[in-house]
Length: 142
Image 1: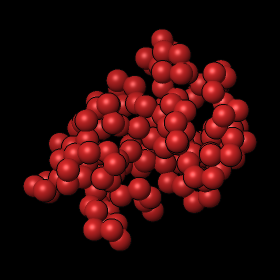
Image 2: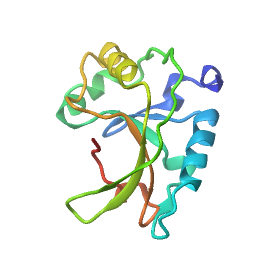
Image 3: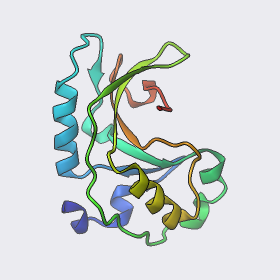
């Protein structure tokens, strides 16, 4: 797994959300899934924008400063992705996403990592939307 060569700071991003960037094998999987989308009005997200949000909202906002500069435990399981799904948001946005297959393992990992999780979070990668800009994807999926 190529993550072993990276430091945790390189793939766990501590920002307004805690997110995990994808390794080369995961990017390859997502690019194949992006190509399977037949909607002509959907543009793929760039590789630099592909990520899995692990924690956000008040759950993250209240604790994120505690984690800056801290060593975080590495993920010890492989991540694979389900077939892309289309979602329409109440704001008129349309996007495609792929859920990770390992929902329970990711839930348990995040809980061990930071002591809490977002209730009801579905771990996924947004892979395309109408503009190709990451901020234009539907934020929460089911």
